[in-house]
Amino acid sequence: MTVRFVRPVSHSATAARRLGISALVLFLIAALAHRFGPLTTPDFLALLFLSAAIALASVPLSLMGLARLWQVGAEGGVAAAKGLVYAAVPLGVVATGAFYYYTLPALYDISTDLTDAPAWVAEPKARQQWLPRPVNVTSADRRIQFSAYPGLTGRRYEGALDRVYEGVQKALPSARIGITRKQGIELVQPDISERPAPQDEQAPVPDVAPIPLPRPQPSLTPVFGNAGDVLLQGETRTLVFGLRFDVVIRLREDAETTSVDIRVAPRYGAHDLGIGEQIAEDFLDRLDTELLGIAGN
Image 1 (cartoon, rainbow, N blue to C red):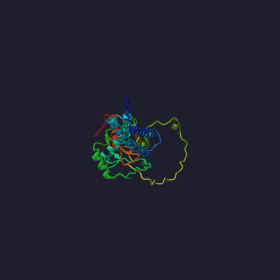
Image 2: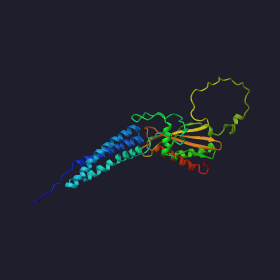
Image 3: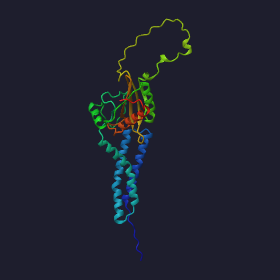
Image 4: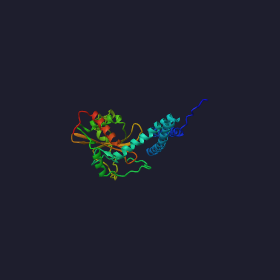
């Protein structure tokens, strides 16, 4: 008489694999829709947390499947292992973000000038949804930034404003910063009085009496920053997940030197997870490379 051994089947391992792959698919769809599609950051984070919750539910089921495989040789070891692998992706992303969230200070506005931060040409506005943040940056926030990132400082170059502006223009593409608004750009443009006059302008002008124009009314719109500042405002996105950050770069000429300061803020949320400081340092390092040889103190 032949005795046939029938292996039990671990249904928990099968359920773990299904939950794990569901969490991974949801995470990938949300990440791609946020990086290349219309999904906003608050919606992306909500879907990310949902996928992590599904992945977390699959972990104990996978462990149960592996335990059944060890104890009674139940089928489902491969399914349990796949469940753990699938769940590791969304859980790893959330765990990494949580680590930076709790280990780094809660800053959302980074500036190389702590006392006179570069002013926005146009204040960035976005519907925060469930990610509210303070309206203004306080001096206490700037002190916290100095304690967290003491090495983040502006640059001063021994060169004219137009020369430094050329270096900034070359550093922007490699830093993946796109400029959308400019202010004070006339300070770095050639003086029109130095250009040769066109041929038709050299012809004699008929004697015509000038027509008086009404005197313009004084503007009541407040002007931010110094009149001699060049402000370049733009945006950048992180390489993998496409998180949006607003950036403003200020060029200020002082005697024979030109200072460059940068301000970085995420489009959403009250914590930049340290990415703002990385964006600022990356741009300044690229600018140092472009202006190598004229850096001052």
